[in-house]
Amino acid sequence: MAPPLRNVLIIGASGNLGPSILEAITHSSSFAITVLSRKSSKATFPPPIKIYPIANDYPEDELLGAFKGKDAIVNMAPITEVALHKRIIDVAIKAGVKRILLSEFGTNVPELQTTEPAPIYDGKVEIREYMKAREGQGLTWTALVVGAFFDWGLNDGFLGFDMTSHTATISDSGNMPTNFTLLSTVGRATAAVLEKPAETKDRYVFINSFRVTQNEILKALEKVTGGKWGVEGTTCEAESRLGKDLMENDDWSGVGHAIMGASFRGREYDFAEGRELDNELLGLPRDEDLEAVVGKIVRGEKA
Image 1: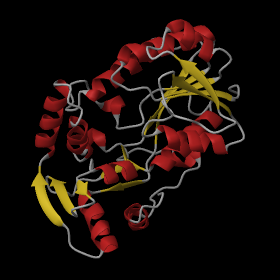
Image 2 (image 1 turned 120 degrees about the vertical axis):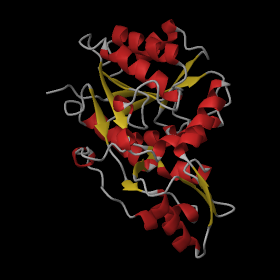
Image 3 (image 1 turned 180 degrees about the vertical axis):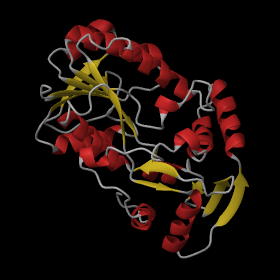
Image 4 (image 1 turned 45 degrees about the vertical axis):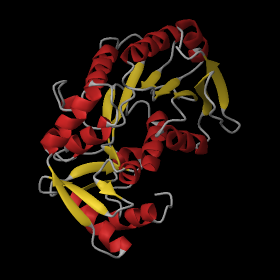
């Protein structure tokens, strides 16, 4: 039986996903939580969460001090900082940390190659291989595959829907299903992984909230908003190319285009096709009500 993971350190708690994970872990009585926070950060966290301040460049000696006595690390550092992720892994091994949740929380990286359209995936592949090469040194790992964040992506336009102008940009036919997960569900999944260390050791864990097409999302939006939306067309290939070009020139507005290009391609991106998901293992719902979720998002409620 795997030892319990009680003392948890979170890196990146104030980012897009961090608050949802922090909320879910905080609601469990199983964990004592510490947040690693850059000294320049203005983010605040309520008690009983502990704060461990660290210099902006995450020096090794300060990381070691933060990691000592911790059972698990939830790492949400920017995936573009590959050297930092490797340092975190090495210091976690040195400090005797038992489990790290890698900064995945996205698409189906295990079955993608570094030649895929979004260069942001290159770092994930490199970090995964770095961790796998260090298995057996005391640190185990888990990586959550969740697809696109549905509520965040819908609100920010990354899924092709402009919530202000009521305009949809549909990739190809709009009939390719893909996987989406709500931020709150990703948070609950993270807490459940920490509560089930044996079942989630050294592997990818696959979950979703639903598997739907752009046209199904558009239909739900039109029903909830009570009117027809304008529709424009694009292709996954064009979106992927634009996203890649922008990001290779350090313009991270390309992330949205890359997500559009990747999410609706199908094939290896559709990780639920032919695979038993881990929702049941983690106590998560399957096939949530798309229209009900869209309604909450449109009304500004938490989904």
